[in-house]
Image 1: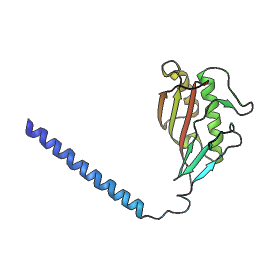
Image 2 (image 1 turned 135 degrees about the vertical axis):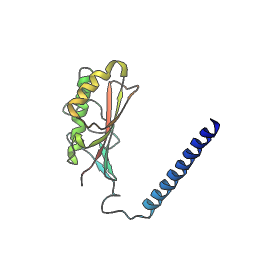
Image 3 (image 1 turned 30 degrees about the horizontal axis):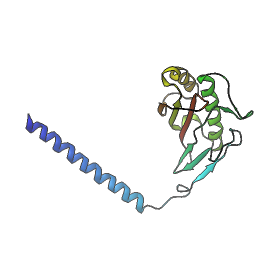
Image 4 (image 1 turned 90 degrees about the vertical axis):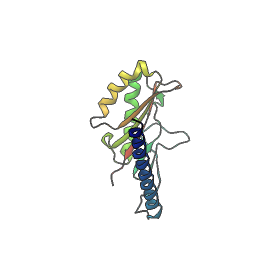
Length: 165
């Protein structure tokens, strides 16, 4: 029984060494490769139809991806937080995020990662998820939803989007 355990450990160590070698080779390839076109360019996005940002950009395009700011449930027409619960706030946030995606001609189907902060995950996840499904369909992007101490809002969402060339 101990011998079998040692053999398993040897296999795991061997695979770890191979993985480390592959990571090293990948890093060496990246370090020695030359950027192609605008791949290495960084572009800051301000969406005129989204709520005015503070001391941050609405989004940044880098390495073929658009990273958005954490969007809050502000109505761009009034500059105020929308009334209602988590469903209304989630819907407004996703509309605001669509305005940012529009700048780069992206759609929610191009989103690869969603991070959502809910004031009360236990109470609000169901309503948040129902609205989320109005904007996203299978195959869904990966998603992280966490409880956060948010000020005067119930939800905040940011996304990472694969930009089409």
